[in-house]
Length: 222
Image (tube, rainbow, N blue to C red):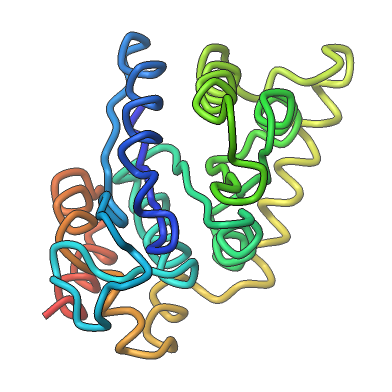
């Protein structure tokens, strides 16, 4: 499995901790991690608006764009994201077709979301409640999220009905949402271009399996 980690600028100082914890859990399982959002910096709140293209000032609005393109192009299979409260990243990701993001504050959230809702993204709060033992909680979250197959149902005897609802929700989202290329073109061009930068592009171009989305990103990233 290919997993993208996407941090927004307000939590960039914790990127190193999150990345190392995620890798510690998932790499022994054979998964690959791509760090596509804000990389760790010393004073993220003091970043200028024109921070380097290799490490842009990404908000939760940019997170949604990156997650949608990475997942719909099959450049990655899963996104681990979040912001201060985790709520902004959650809402932003779930606006787009092909993205099913769950809110996760402790390991049971991760396990139940993936077994019942079979999603492809987790949004975690990295400021609210992020104190002593935060790295232990993260390790346990990632362990519960990635150590067992998704969509097995919970309780197990409800697997069939829960999986049916997952398929129905996916169908509803396809019917109510415009195609992703149309959505991306309708967004503010500056916001889109800010999301299509260095670390994201490295992962996207290396793994994209959708020629239409690849052409779109190449056009808009220039």
